[in-house]
Length: 504
Image (cartoon, rainbow, N blue to C red; front, side, top):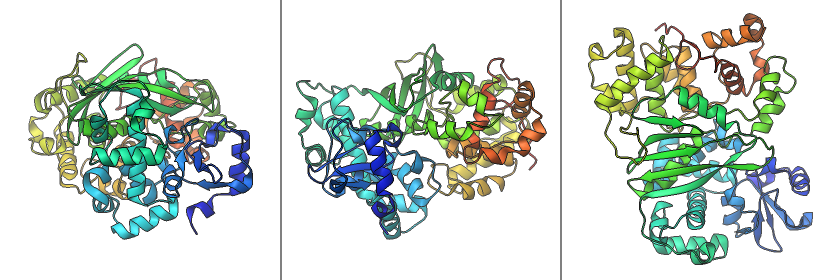
């Protein structure tokens, strides 16, 4: 059965008739009489049901010969929350495709990361998403190119390579085929100028979006040299495939439900080929593809999380721009205060991180890579000897590839691999799964911050934790709602809000 057959045509058509924005990015509507595909909320006149076909991805619609609607811009919607949180092979592959793995390593490289042969992975993607890895990567490149054409003054040659195309000719042909317009027609009368390495883009996020709460979380855990923040903004360095970069985000709340909001991102890139990877990693950081309405509906009747979800609609789980960095920072933060962990991490950054130049004051270094940290003497690290050994052991596992946090491997396999390392216990492994692997269903029942939050809210911690199964499959969001009640006042210990002793 194909992916288009698995879509419920009747349910999809009802969503199209209602123009419900919650389904944007979940499926696409192709109209046979016009040769155009749209998002479900397209404001154009609703086509007759006999004239439409539904596809699970923009790439599938494009592969079937349809062009993107110029009115609703279906390829500009946030990604599907279904595959973004999925632990299936298709979901893992889509996350890697969005990061540009196919452009850099080819289909064979993508297949190796997911753990399948390229032929079998292609069958999975065609079955689940209606298109193979090359078509999915091509659709992603076309989307990036359109955004750069319409929102920047980069030359078309710079845009072609920044979007991941191998030639300007391929870029021109793809844009004409997908959008039925030339790059010049998409840009209109705007003129280009030579690339400066600075790109400003608007990143689409689903609403409601508690941007201020997300910013507070990130600002509370700043590592000197790597991150800085101010009123309504956050910036950090990026270690990208072709060179270093930085991003500065303008973040605010977007309370209106069922619509698309935008986070402004200013990128400084040493190599414009890293544009797509920088955008994808930044989207992961702000949890842009979360479906906040589905999460809120799930918690609506819960006596513990329900009131918190109504107080902070659209609360996100902060993601990451580098999984290895999250894991290292988590180990450093075991059993110490947030301030202490940031101080120690800042010292490691200053001593072992690569220096970078940035127009943003305070951004001076990339986070040290795993290979560098693996070569350090645990006794020389500014932390207890056992934690130093755990850090160096983890770094060695990351550097060798025995533990991969690039969102390609299965989450359960990664957790088991982490637990086999000395000094890594369940709390650390689960926190890494939540932040580095974007696991939506992680809960830390022994966390000090969880117990403190429940007590402050007037709930019995033991009883509330015993009922955590009711929060599935969104327990990571329940956890964030509990932690969010602790800021302010500022919690005193943990990597985030609590601290646990790792027993290995």
